[in-house]
Image (tube, rainbow, N blue to C red; front, top):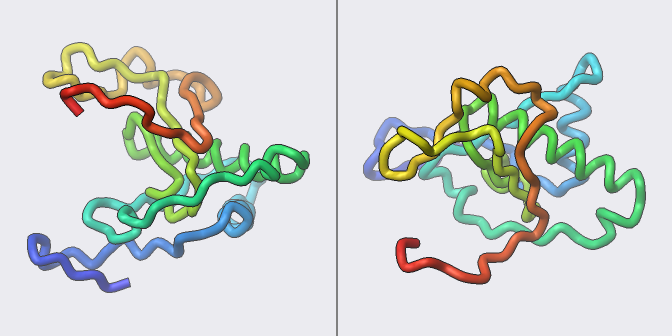
Length: 149
């Protein structure tokens, strides 16, 4: 892609191959994983237009068949790996060009001492194993907002 943004004249876009379906994303992960281990995903940065595309809900069928459940789990693990490699406290599948309402929020973060409530990775938790901490939200919905949001 060759996106232009007036406030960032040199910005060319992140060239994500999306939006990808869950199946396409899973096949992309399999192709990138040469040793059977996990891989991180590319991550779009503002003002990439892919960030403005609403995500589609994850269908209930993704939980009914074991093969679909494994596919969803591998994508979730890739989101976690990507968030941690990028130093992000959370990451939505849409930010990686995947058309699915799936979010990872890292539990290994601390907002203390960062100023203005901005969370960052805690040095105490930086040594945590990749399989520890964090939560995954599938088809999350905002049901209430505080006056600050």
